[in-house]
Length: 579
Image (cartoon, rainbow, N blue to C red):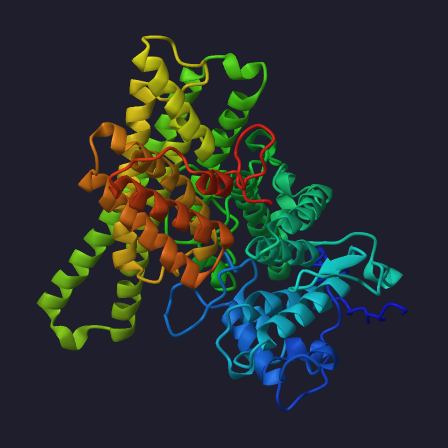
């Protein structure tokens, strides 16, 4: 079957004194077809209609596109996609009623595919319809990728060949761009959230390779004087690339933890400005003259706001340092070297980041107090209701960011002081007990020493308390369900050790049991919000351990529990969640 022909979009008109807009996607993306459709509210989807109308109603496609730009956790009645971690592209240019952003068809299909997995629309109610629709959108995305593979996996686990064989018209240009990379990232995230997590590594490798080809890590290596004379489209395109790079940076750290992988992007190689704050980015056309001033190179290690890059990027920067330490400890030769100085440096980063979270909370509280005082003085009739709602929304989001950020910081401390692999942790603990009983020295890899173990245990308990606080603020754990699971899991391993050792320490401990119950409840909520096999498996393991220690006959690690833990390994050569 011959590949489809893609019309080439004519370049937008720009001032003759400025440079042409930066390459967006593939040759500035495909044509935005102007053919009207009575059921299509957004012209940007018009080129997709011949394919979409065979998959879903066009009105539903418009709803999915709207859902893509919903803020996570904004409403329990809106099923926002857990796979949309942040918005690289601005909402208004995409949904513009007459002149939408020139966007590749592959990216548009990927956006619809990401939201279709959790959208609450009538066409998904028919049994089997969601899987069929998601599979069709996935196929459409892959077929519109310039670098598509010759196979893809269906949701029923079957591998099906791709009829395009990855060959497309030469009109698409010699290199891919922003849209192509964002498409690959969306595929990486969606596939990693599914059953066949190892498949996402294929998409992730493509993402990393394309980011290197585009040299995104050196976007701002030279501050050019002509940057001050760029057209708005150029500035917006450059900011999209910055946001895209920092999303790749964050995912690099997150997936390294998930799959026990080394880093692909190193801080020393980065010369890229930090992204603009979310509100400034959405209104960049209103602040066009000021966004080019006072830019700071990243990465950042302090939380400065409630946007994804303002709070999650600093956490991932610290995680990157811990990942490097982890793999050094697993190294056959370097693993025996002392790393006390490195650990001290990371401790300082954790404290600095936690302090910035406290400052963010205090700033929000002080602002709220000033507003309330002003209202009491001037009277409620002078209140701006819209501003009041916006302030309340911001305060609630600050609370969420502080709660989630605090929990992740405790988990990072657990990763810094303790072992990552649960089975290795339990085995080392047993070896340490035997060695203590015979007054001998435990193995050289023993981490259950007073200083490290006490710090690790303290942060694990504090982490469980942070989880309880999160559940009060976000009962559905809908704020960041895709990202939250792996940190909840790694913060739970040490509690599994506590539960496992309770019989040797005198029987059930109410505080440990309460902490474990909190973690079990959090895993159960996560399973409802975004079901993953590793969370279902760990919930069963922790629950069975609690049942076992409450019995009158304490047992060693039973074979079923050991087999379940052996599925996910963070030892040398282990692949984490990638089965």
